[in-house]
Every structure is written in structure tokens, then in C-alpha cells.
Amino acid sequence: MKIFVKAKPDGYEDKVEKIDETHFIVETRGPAVQNRANRAITLLVAQYFGVESSKIRMIKGFKERNKGY
Image (cartoon, rainbow, N blue to C red; front, side, top):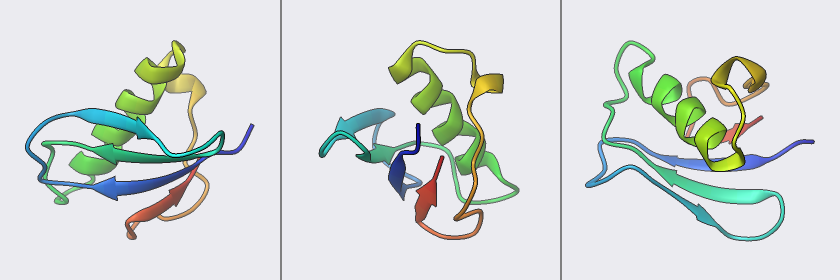
């Protein structure tokens, strides 16, 4: 399953907002420094879907706000 995420680092809270079946907006308090926001977003996506974070793999958008998993 592929999903697309619009990342919002340095946010007010950690949350996942569903736009449609494959598109989400993920806000995290983690800063966009030293991969902290990417790790936090991956963890939030894993929690949202109820799977381990090791089962989630980012395939695009490592240095962009639009990411693919």
C-alpha cells in the first residue's frame, strides 16, 4: 500500500489528518533537523495504522515536505 504525506515539522502538536484514502497531513513537534521530523512522522504514521515503525518505509521525499511511504 502506498500513501502520500504532507509533512508539517515544528508543529504545535503531533497529529495525523486523513485527506482521502491515500493522502494524509502529518504535523509533528519534531524539528526538520538531523532527520528528527522524518523519524517522528514515520512513527506517527505507524501508530495511525497500528503497525510497527519498522514496517513503514519512506520511498520518496527525504528532504521535502511531500513524502511517499
